[in-house]
Picture 1 (cartoon, rainbow, N blue to C red):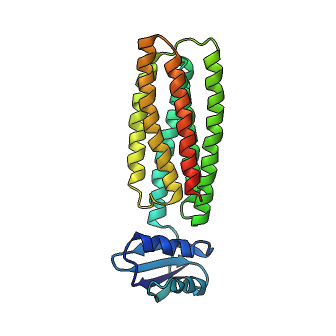
Picture 2: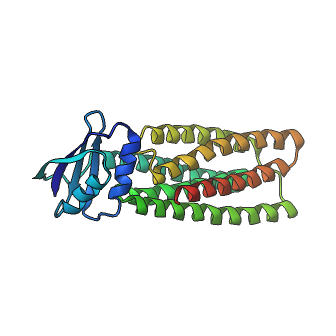
Picture 3: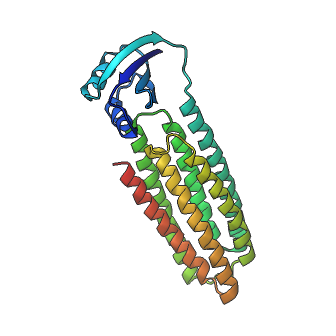
Amino acid sequence: MNKTIFEITKMDCPSEENLIRMKLDGISNIANLDFDIPNRKLTVFHSGQIDQIEKSVLELNLGGRKISTEQTDQTEFIENANQKKLLWTVLGINFAFFLIEMTTGLISKSMGLVADSLDMLADSFVYGISLFAVGATLTRKKRIAKLAGYFQITLAIIGFVEVLRRFFGDEKLPDFSTMIIVSIFALIANGICLYILQQSKSKEEAHMKASMIFTSNDVIINLGVIIAGILVNWLSSNKPDLIIGTIVFALVIQGAFRILKLSK
C-alpha cells in the first residue's frame, strides 16, 4: 500500500471534495481517500502507480499538486471502520425489532405491527447491503442504493396484497394495547438509529442516505401504528389497523423511489 499526499489549493468546501471523489471513482487501485479541507490536503491510499490518479487530480484544475508518495502499512481506515460499526449497530436494532414486531403482530392480529416488522426486515437487509458498500466506489454505492430501492418496492407489493386479504376476510380485532406498547418501544429504537446514522461523517454518500431515509420513514410509521391502536379501541373496528398497514406500504414505496433517485 502506498500513501500519496496532494495539495489542492482550490479545495475550499465539501463541493470540491465531492467533485474529486467523482473524478477518482472507478480507479480500482484506490483504497481510501482522506480529505483535510482546512489545510487543502488530500491523502490517497493506493496500490500500484500514482500516474492515473495524479492525472485525474490535475485535470480538475483545482490547483492540485503532488507533494509526496511513500509506502505505508495502513490497511484499515478509521472512517470505514466507524461506518461499519454504526451500520452493525442499527442492523442489530432493526432485526431485533423485526422479530419482536412480527411475533407480537401475529399474536395480536395487528396488520400494522406485521407491516412495520416487514419494514424493519427490509431495513435490516439495507443496512447489511450497505456494509458491503463501505469503502467502495461511488458507482458501486449507487448500484447498492438501487438494489435497496427495488427490494422495498417488492416488499410493499406483498404488503398490499396481505392488506386486501385481511380487509375482505373475517378478521378478529387486533389487540390495541400490544400495538401501542410495542410501537412505542420501536419508536424509541428508530430514534436511536436515526441519531446514530446522522453522526456519520459519510452521511451524504448514497448508501448512507438510503439508510437514513428508511429510518426516517420508520419513525413516522411507528407514530401511525400508535394512533391506529387508539382508534381500534375507540371504534371497536379493525379498519384503522388495516388503513395504517396500507399507509405503511405507501410510505415504503415513496421511500423506495427516493432511493432510486439517489442511485441515478
